[in-house]
Each structure stands twice: as C-alpha cells, then as structure tokens.
Amino acid sequence: MTLLAADGALLRGWSRWWFWAWTSCCWLLLSLPVITAPAATLWLVAQQRRQARGEAALGPGETLRFLARRLLPALRLAGCHLGIACLVLIGLLGPSPGGPYGWLVLVTSVVAGVTWALVAPWSVVMFERTGRTVAALRMAYVLALSRIELALTATVAMLVAAVAGPFLATQVPYAGPLLAIALPAATASFVIMLGDRAAAVHDVVSAGRIGVRFGPFRMRKAP
Image (cartoon, rainbow, N blue to C red; front, side, top):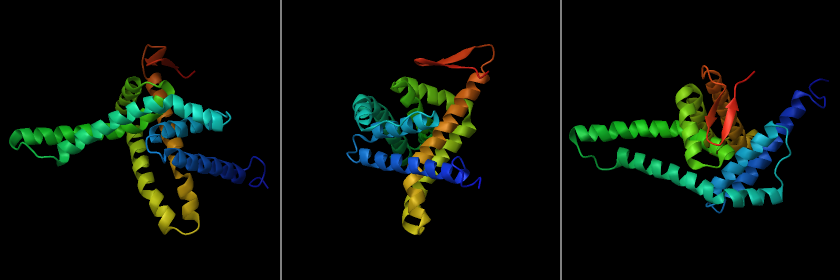
C-alpha cells in the first residue's frame, strides 16, 4: 500500500521520470537549430533547478524569452569551450616540434585537457546562475580544484551518459529507450547536485569567513 500511495516511491519515481523525459525531449528539439544548443542546455539546467526547488516549470512563452535572453551569452561560453578543446586537440594531435619542446607541448596539452574536462560540466551549471562567462569559468575552476573528486564524478557521468544514451536506445529492448529518453535531464540533475554539494562544502571550509563571493552572488555558510 505504501508503494502505491500518492506519495509512494512508485509514483514519485514515475513523476521524476516523466519530468526528465519531457525536459530531455524539449532540450533535444530546442537544440536542433544547433546555434541554440548552448542556450537550450542552460534551459535544461534551469528546469532541473526549478523542479528541485519545487517551482513551476518554465512555460512556452517563458522558454522563448529565456532562450532569446541567453542565446548570445551562451554562445560566448560555448565558444570558449570550443576554443579550448581545439587548442588541446592541436597540442595532442598536431605536429610536434620534437625534442624537449615536444614533450612540453604534450604535457601541457594533457594537463589543459584534463582541467578543461573537469571544469566544463560545472561551468554550464554556474553560468545558468550568473549569466557571465568569466565568472562561471572562474567559479567552476575553483570548485573543481577544491573538490576534484566531485568534479571527476561529474565529468565521468557526462561521458557515461554520452555513451550509454545511444546504446540504451538501440541495443536494450523495451526499457532501454525509456531510460535513454530521460538520460540528458537525469545527468543534468546529477551534475547540478554535485556542483551544489561542492559549492556548499567549499563555503563551509573557508575558515574565518562568513561567505565566499563568486561573481555577482554570495554563498552563505550552512547553519
């Protein structure tokens, strides 16, 4: 009886899956023009945050205004990530100067690539809160260095989701497509949770300070 109650685990799981499924489908549709994909990703993050806070989801009109307002700022953040990824790939796969300089380029590219992979997921989460590229990247970098195990978990979750999505949709009958539909939003919720946990812990361990200022907002110590 408890399982099938109005607030039981079964109905809560169904409600959560349904929310993830429809926000994932909307995210995919909003990303089809490609140029709107960064803003659509911010919309996906915003929807997960609103659901976690118990707020109503953004409606069609609010979604259009959200995308219009965040389109250009999101493209700037995406451009930064694309530029960093290109530099890392050039350093790893491009022509090597040879000798000690070649090893220097290789080591630098590996370190930059690993750092970028740890920072990238949380930069999107922080950008949704700040709307500023530099502030979001700085916040994500500080949090990734302070809680590297959580940043690594977020990065691995993104990579696993990218591989698991097509596999579930094509290789696992019946339940596979249902899981694949909800995977983007579920992954976003998980990354957001890890980012918020890292931010809270970073604030708590900042000895002798009431709060830590990141960009335009202040995070307070937990009581």
